[in-house]
Image (cartoon, rainbow, N blue to C red; front, side):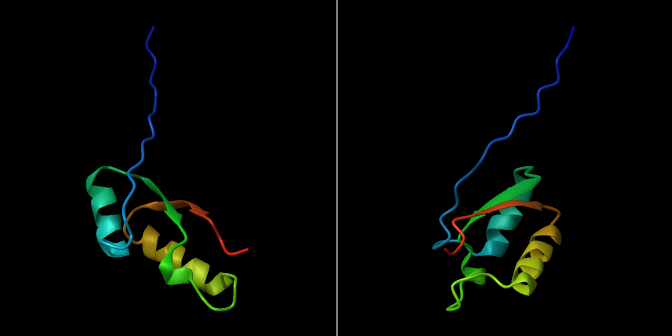
Length: 77
């Protein structure tokens, strides 16, 4: 009997040191398929919320690299 276990692992990137493009590129090189972002600066506005259009553009930017946006942590309250 054999079992096929899919494993998920994560790498924390310091957003102050790397651009989103560099992070996405490195994640793909590591073989990642999904990405979780934490309060992306590309979506921060003075409005206190994320616009749907901004969220769609952000998701598409990530998907263009071959990754899937799995979650956005710490959205505005």
